[in-house]
Length: 256
Ligand code: PGA
Image 1 (cartoon, rainbow, N blue to C red):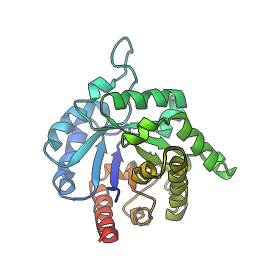
Image 2: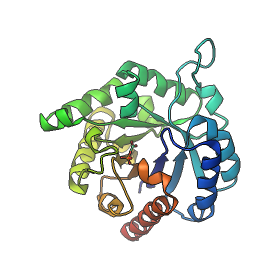
Image 3: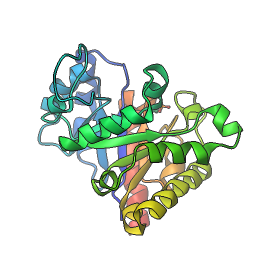
């Protein structure tokens, strides 16, 4: 059984004080929910404060990005060496980074390698945009993204994949559970062919794109979907808690 994961991607939201307040509101209740990996990914500047707040709890901390060099003359960047003491996970290749910051497959590949060098678990984001979706190119795009950043060591390391169709991110227009399950099944199949059945079966693949407390169950109930990467709804304490709770309940039922 793959342990489900719910990861909150706060994106460029919250001051340090707001981050402290948000985490303070949810940490006890969130920490008490078993059998789900609970991850929060605040902005870089809040990582240290949040890390103190969740110390000793079962909540895991993730960064939203990193640079692939360890240190040096890279003004404004944050390295995996700097993150390694603070975080367990790091989101890599989010579509907003691909789109607004010109991240290519090659850059994403270097970032994954850098994260793994320091023991950070990457959450690799992949997904097609609406033009590609309408042109029926979803599988082709996803295959290219997987191949651009795939070596055996990634999958063996327990990398997490988040399938996030770009047209569903922040739009309120989530994929249906069935659609997401099919595409995630395709991702698992592709990895199975390349890396073998066992690696593919152990790999966690999340869905992301307009997940809310109201639609989370639709995704979690699908056999191929191992959780969610949650943007907007992760900034609302009650909403995020509800998504994690529903996941624990549904998965408990499915495995019981
Ligand atoms: P959303 O974002 O939940 O606000 O659609 C998801 C993401 O970008 O990870």
